[in-house]
Structure formats: structure tokens, C-alpha cells
Image 1 (cartoon, rainbow, N blue to C red):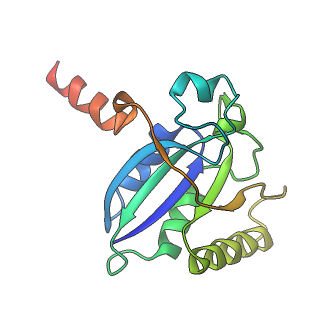
Image 2 (cartoon, rainbow, N blue to C red):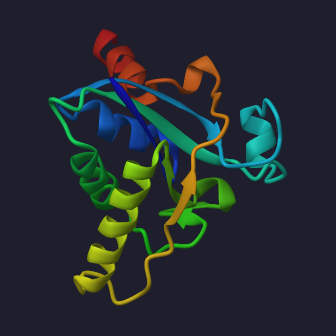
Length: 156
């Protein structure tokens, strides 16, 4: 199994998107990319931690490639939006690929360059590509949020 970490706006929707990908074994949401140790949701929302709402994906590379995960990442949000996605605003909603090794870094940079040159966007892609650092698990109620919400509505 391998690990990939992405930030692309509110982590609820990003996680839900990756959970549907064949070859993704597990996902969890949390905070990474900042300077504040052991942040909680309120810390991150207060914009004092420097962290991004992120999704960590554990995947089987024999079933899904990192390049395929990058394609899911790019298609799941607008990478030209700086510190926002849809109605969500703030640095915690920025677009970031956190790489875990040099191969992931090279693939991320290549995919960003290819997408920028494709002409799909008339603005620059602002997605950051940074080394993965400490990943702090978000509170339990954030984990698989949409899945829990769907189950709850089915029970009503």
C-alpha cells in the first residue's frame, strides 16, 4: 500500500470523491502543511495554524496509479482558485499536493505543467506542490462525513 495526501477545499467532499476510486483502500481527513502542532478544527478555522484541510489516501498501486489519483484530484476542484473553493474561503481551503517521495513530486509537477499547458484554464493554476509533513487527524465527526450523513438520512 502507498499513501497520497491532497488538499482541495473542504475535506468532506474531497474525501468522498477519493473513497469512490477503485484501488483506494482507506481515507482519512485531517490537517497538514502548517506550523501549529496538534490543531483542532476551530484552530484551523481561526486561520492561525497554516494548515490545509487535507485528505490522506491509502491506495493499492496495482489497482490505481498515483497519476490516476492526480487526475481525480485535478478534476475534483478548481485549481486556479487561491485559498478558496466554492463558498469556502481561507488558507485552509487552498489547493495542495503533498508528496511522500520524489516519484510523487515528479508526477505532481508533470501533471500540473501538462494541465496548465492544456488550455483548460484561462488563469494560472495556483496549486502548491509540497513535501508531506506531519498529518494531524481531524476529529471523528469529520471522518467520512458524507457517508455518515447518507446513512443517517436512509435510517429516517
